[in-house]
Length: 406
Image (cartoon, rainbow, N blue to C red; front, side, top):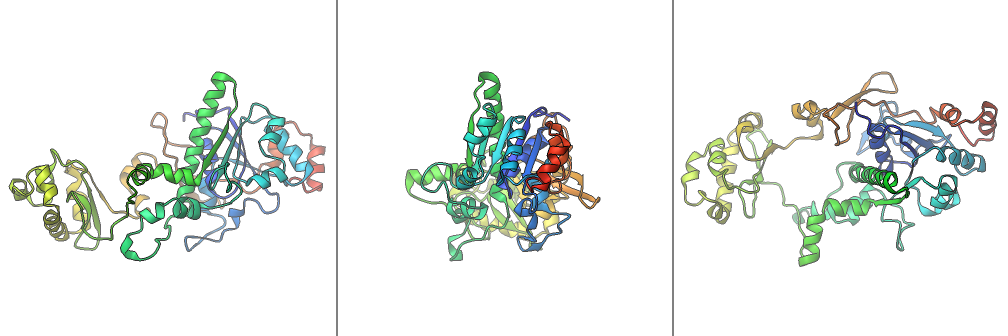
């Protein structure tokens, strides 16, 4: 397996998913990621007992495994002078410092950029935040559900106006994981820049900026016109293109047609839908009349797809030239042949010794499957890491006795 970050050490002082997800990606790529956790409590997220309403097994914990696989955990109480000394000793050996603590906490516990740079002037300092590290709200905390989904406009855009209320975010840590990938990309660029110029940069990524980038084309359209886009209510509706809509099958499944540009696809699409005669119908035989008669086209296509089962269409449309997809659940993806063929699922040994499946990061190198390990137990590698950086055993015992480390 190509380890493009081999030899890079990342010191992570972060909790929850947003910033730790960046550390997980860097660990996937071969970096040595040292996760600092409180010596008693660990990462607060370890104590979460449910996710999206589902009970969690503490030994098989998705909210720990997903953003922390492949790391080593060191228990340090960074609020103590002894703990801060240890943090600086590790920082001297690191290439990147990664955190999502608020400015006041970073200052109080002396791991803001000036403190870490005093220990290591060449370290890249990466911050993740809810709303950015500048402005009046730099001290305001936030989560995926507030900054990424609610305030950003993403939740509003995905809520059909007819619902009369706000659509809840259905995927915990959704923006967190996307934002983590953004941070990992920024760190990669900063490492490249330091290699070329010798300059160590500061990096900032917020959940708000992550959402706005993901919705960038629509945000730009809104700023240009003052109009906002909204999702439509379920059902076969298409404003301008009947080849772009969701259609229900006879057994309640959904097939999404997404042929953005119908040119060259009209005859083949109608043939696969069991409506070959429509390719010669002047209402639908070319792109302009197809658009002008979208409502009539939707009705005919909806009737055709409604006549057969979801599984029939899944098999039958595989030879269609135009773009389409079965409307799947997140559970369905776990058995998706294409996802499996592209190594999107990785199996690690769980904390209980049993196999545990996690999702790999979206970047692959040389088509190689990912090799990684489970997320560490809290403070699992404290002694090992501290001995690696040169602390004597007597000093480690002193720090333990003082409660500075686990």
